[in-house]
Length: 176
Image (cartoon, rainbow, N blue to C red; front, side, top):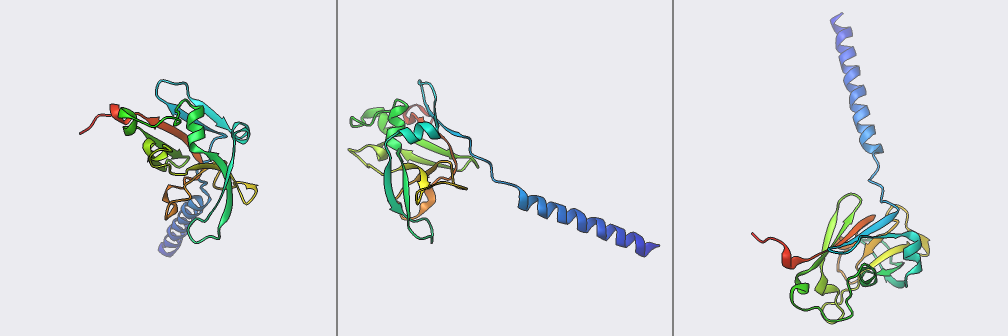
């Protein structure tokens, strides 16, 4: 009788363990929404869906992530997206604007930051693209939109499944 009870306990434990393992393996990464939200203080939020992005001027770059073969990426310059949201980089940044930064967030809440000055053509002019195609095909698991920084030595700032882009006025943040 004691042996049967032990077998039942062991079997229940095994089933519960298997359920936890299979649940963890089948959990999907958060899905990216159909549109990227671009937020700038004092301006209405801009929602960029696939149709809006497709209508904007695109650039192509060849770049590789990690140990993958180089791919042909196609997308919109981040500075063009910011201009559409009301942040113009046509004139050199000055004063408090030099402290502003851009925060890009993924569906899984991974975030990267760029100083707005890094994107200014007269200062850093870092090339940053919001890509929507790779080798001529829409992005699958990495999209619908992915941030790409082709000049980076490693792809730590290549954000998959971008959900928001926020321009923050660094001149007004509280400092410790």
